[in-house]
Length: 235
Image 1: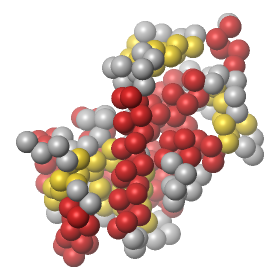
Image 2 (image 1 turned 45 degrees about the vertical axis):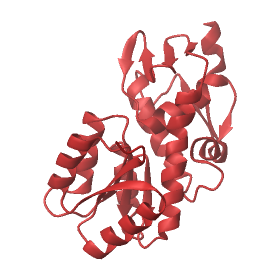
Image 3 (image 1 turned 180 degrees about the vertical axis):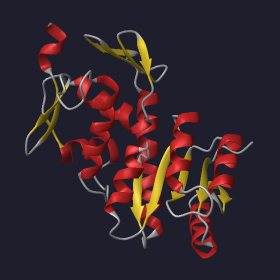
Image 4 (image 1 turned 45 degrees about the horizontal axis):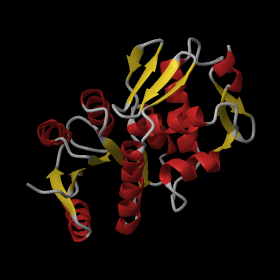
């Protein structure tokens, strides 16, 4: 049985798919390939890869729908979407649907590999934490079981959302810049932009705030970043 990290590439353009596959294999990943959204979804549900590289434009069901279905079925899967150059709406929509990261075509395969490893480090860092729980008022992270609760009700978070909540809950009241969050979650060599943080924060708010447009837990520090309300622990 292979101990290599399993990566599924869902890409309809054969030259791109094979090029990515060759580079991933050379860097000691186990690679699965799919040409259509339907095939990719079936293969993902069957093989449970740790990482899915998912093109937006696919024959049949598109990458957005595949992303949504994978996230609903296997919340722990890392999803990196491939978008066309200049298509900011594709990036935002993908992140809104639960993608952890995105790459803009054309790109260097070594950058993709760096992104994969950065996202895997997020997951591995969760697994390595010795402290079992972080609890602030009605929010609780169970680090052993990798579960998040609000008022004892479990809420599904993606790996990236979980990592962001861990950062915020470990230092309630501290303001984190968007750059700090990017560095802590994705690593200092991350090539993306700060919009990624904003989209993930918005998704978290939709899950934990009574009124996401007037957040009471995760506050915006205008022109800087975000913080978890420091007085929550004392209320």
